[in-house]
Length: 531
Image (cartoon, rainbow, N blue to C red; front, side, top):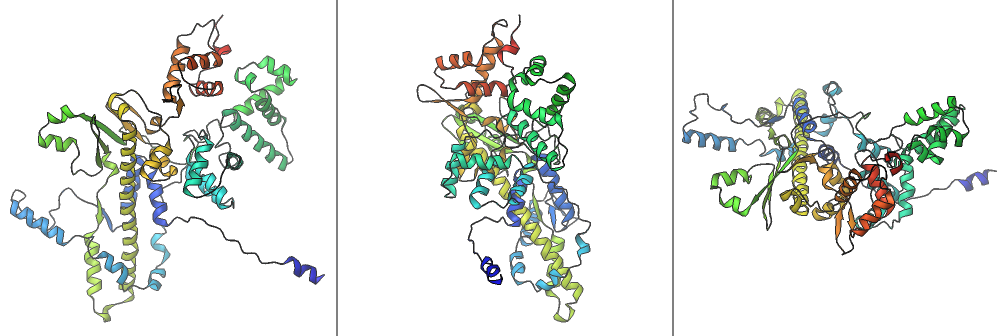
């Protein structure tokens, strides 16, 4: 018996590769996805909680109250003095040569941070990523799940081509992934909270929510007939439900009205947009001003500007601004000023640190050591935060520059949106698709012709007979225009719309036309028909 027990006890070693984000990287990722107003609030919160961090004033007259601001000599002397007292100098040395030991740092009383507010709330994507990490997936499946999450639209649906994900994983991480692997992992992701996220269609989204509800009811030994009937309706009679053909639905289910009504209400109680901000715990930020502006100047317009005006408009020397020169002219990308705050390390604490460093060895009391440990800790936090802000700004500008290069025609004329997906921009600037998704999500853009969400610039490419591509946005507009002009007594069905698009050289399948019609929230032909 003992020998049998010993034979079952085995030690196994398993080697796997994984990526662990540092605290600085996590902070950068969180800042990257915040829209302007939320980002501004995050900066204010950090300024309130970290005394070493402060905003640079527009002017600083603390050195001399009697200084004459009109005297250029005094101004230059003040500037020179500012440079000599630059708080960013010599701090790297203290980080490495600080006399404050790790023991002192670790022995700080926890009360110092007990009342520290936590203004940041994880958004949906972060919560889902955290859930994925808790699923104990192997490295390949976890990478697939992260790509799926990074590809979700604003409503939480997965509409990206699986082939594109497979190519990305093979190229970036060397995983031999196929479409079956992606579908298998997607089925797991749909069971995360909120249930139904990563579904491809509304029907699938509702089905998985009802199916999960059945499992919970089975576990509690209380299966409700309303849930069972609702699941059957979504699974077998979806067209009748969408068309609101209640009588026909009642006949096919062989249910009395008093049982059909609760089933329909059960379906309506499901969440059709699991990724929507509604019902999300993250703050709902509202801002009227765009997160980024794009201006366009033709060559002739630039020639008419004087040197000062040209420098002002082109953003020369202005933080948070970049320009892209093209054959048509110059594009100027300007981030909202709140996206490029000027922060620095407090001079007051720099002077305090210098005094502590110069103190004689006999004066190195425990109180002084704890003060030095406190300053060192806060300095680390301030440095990381400023670095994360700078990295966020540069990533934002690099992404926008790549977008401008892809969409020069649309941004200069307001027409001719080019097919573009997140992968195109990711490849252009050498970053991951999930990073581009974070930059774009929730951000707005002002162009000379319209204000629009950045997401609206990303559209699928529909192949043309001549070998070119047409933006899915333009295809949707064609579908919308034809339906608006149709004969109400003989509305155009999905096949008729497909035939018309094919006649114009647009190679598109009927199911794609049906998907676009649903995205436009246009009912099927039989529901649009007027007698």
